Image 1 (tube, rainbow, N blue to C red):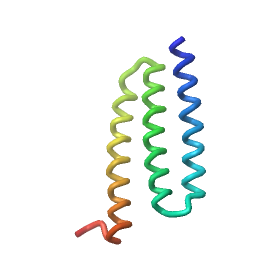
Image 2 (image 1 turned 45 degrees about the horizontal axis):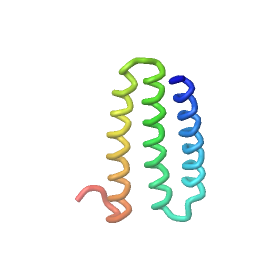
Image 3 (image 1 turned 90 degrees about the vertical axis):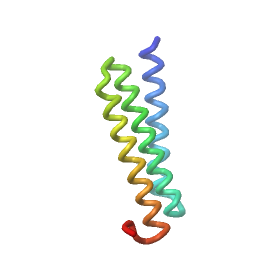
Image 4 (image 1 turned 60 degrees about the horizontal axis):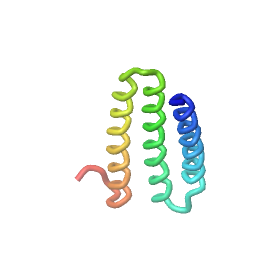
Amino acid sequence: MLSWAINFTAAMICIALILNLWRMVQGPSIQDRILALDTMCINSIALIILYGINMGTGLYFEAALLIAMMGFVSTSALCKYLLRGDLIE
């Protein structure tokens, strides 16, 4: 039963990733594209965690944590660049 729930959730997250990709390509403004990219990062973290639960190992949780940190820093840097036009003050 748990594997069925994990597979169903992974399928729903994959659909969400496809919709985020569509928003990133189709987005009317750069802010929509940044938000879609950040949401894709969160969805990919969720997929990695689900895969780690399915495989029964903790290695994937550490990888998800690293990707989360990189996603936060990259989103913050991109937003700062859009607001000020410069990353270094």
